[in-house]
Length: 294
Ligand SMILES: [Zn+2]
Ligand SMILES: [Zn+2]
Ligand SMILES: [Zn+2]
Image (cartoon, rainbow, N blue to C red; front, side, top):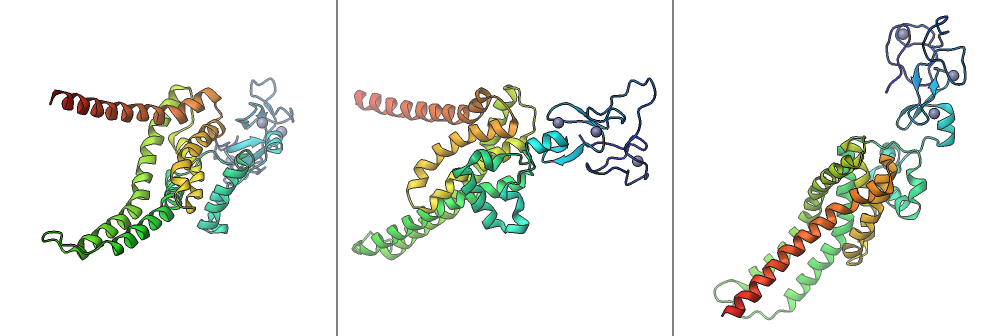
């Protein structure tokens, strides 16, 4: 909630003591005998806002710009304004901001998220997801493409019955290259769907912040995919690492309980796993049954 001028009701930036629109002082004495709340620190002034962290009434002199909006000076001192490197893209450059955020999330997640703005535009989060996906799949994809290319080079050129063997080889390599490019895009799209489902669960758990907060938490939790620059390892290890980290980012950015955060992070993957497992099991069962009947 943005605080507003007691004289003209225009919103003002925390830290200001006079109104930028009407010029009136934002420090106003309470009306005698009035019911208006006064500042918790300065009872001689009217409160212009309540601190979202501690709930205390604050006058203009006590208000500060915190990552989530106007907070009281005491709270800001206790938990200062943190900045996620990803939010400093303009100063750092996108790649450096991405790398630093990933590194911070892997090495010291608590410090990295301390006091950062829990909210961010969905587009900014999606860009982070795309970079993680590229980092996660690209090296492995390139290595696979190279391996297929090399193997194809060794395959003797036998007659394939009409199809030109050179063309077949070329298309297999091109197919692998296409997978390398499309996989990160597909994975980014899936992330949006998964974050949406997670958000529904978090909402049921009593979370009040919006989807963009869930999206941001989900995006940051993809940081382990950076390990994907080492081929093979990350494609298999990173999803589990990210899932664990997601419970932590959901808990921190939504300020919710471990129970709700864990449900939000794990329920969708576990359910979709059961669903896939169920479908797979049904196929196997049907196959066994049909062979038995033969
Ligand atoms: Zn004013
Ligand atoms: Zn406070
Ligand atoms: Zn005050």
